[in-house]
Length: 86
Image (tube, rainbow, N blue to C red):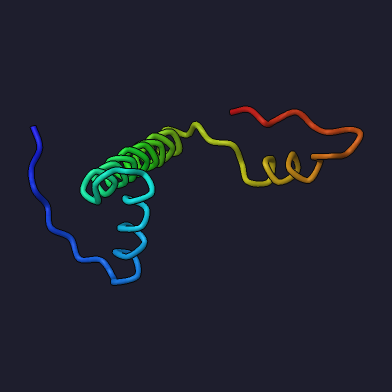
């Protein structure tokens, strides 16, 4: 099932969307719907991961900043350190 959503976009973006739709032989609505769906999926994933990370930190399952910094500074050196663990 689909539904209608009205959005306001600037003139330049609309012109680019029209040109892209013509080149892709798709409707502006199709391309806009695909772009919105991709954004929603990516944003939802990112926010879920942030919430998971915050929950882990609240439970004390984190790695100290100092340990991560030491590890990162070792990257590319002959004696690169292993990643710190919880």
